[in-house]
Image (tube, rainbow, N blue to C red):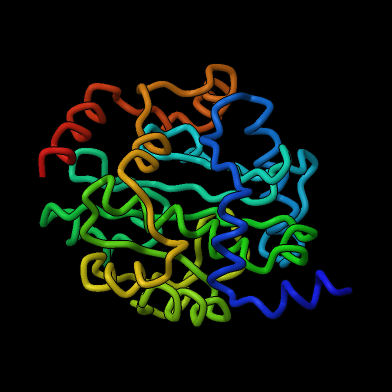
Length: 258
């Protein structure tokens, strides 16, 4: 009882920073980890009525197999408690879930050479969300710290209307359109967007959103490969998931020299 009261007495920022020390951010690459993430997504989306039940009890799409996509699992004490996928749109490799769903808004940005960081598939395990109210903030943190690594001009979020206030308050994102249909989900989503540099300093005022170059490199730098068996499965079902490795390597080189 005393420990609980002490925890509540501390500020949100202090609690988030403490939790950050316990979290293990891992890029998901093995088949076993991907299965866990797909099931976590399915349970979270089904719980909110955002998808219909399916017999596989998994939620994935072709972007899980794209090389401009990074899926992370956040672990506490060895257990995956949340996940988010970071997709990066560049002129050389433009397609991401948001670009596909909102081409009229994001297409012109890409044509003008803009780099877009598109976080998606953000989920938190129900039990962990109750135990750690700070966890959602530390999960979406990955989208923000991806921006300086990839030299992003724009950050996006594709969200339901009832979730817009969260993204507006934390990241300064603004809705760009009315809710519209979105692939794989049953509820319409709106595109929210912000110029990254215009909100950078405001967001960094929260200590738990800060990161070092070393952390960013450890999270996002990787050789261009994907888990073999799962990649083959998705490519068989969704051939558009194939990505040209040479193109993404060239895009990475251009991004780092901006």
